Length: 64
Image 1: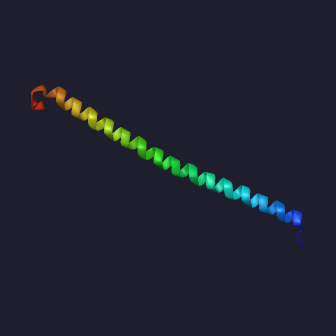
Image 2: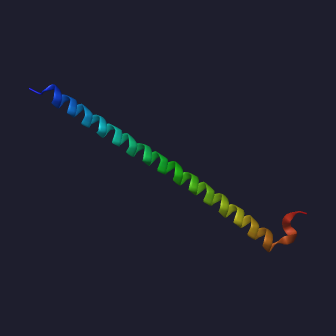
């Protein structure tokens, strides 16, 4: 038979494990969002640089 102390200890251990698993999942979700944001910034930067290089190479092609 399991004593009430052993049950309490088991419940506390289960709570700690559940909290740690939730923290792992939260970190993984943040990492995915962070990577998506970095990728978006990199794409925007590359597009801006390409536009600037095109404008510098063709100064009369800007339409003005």
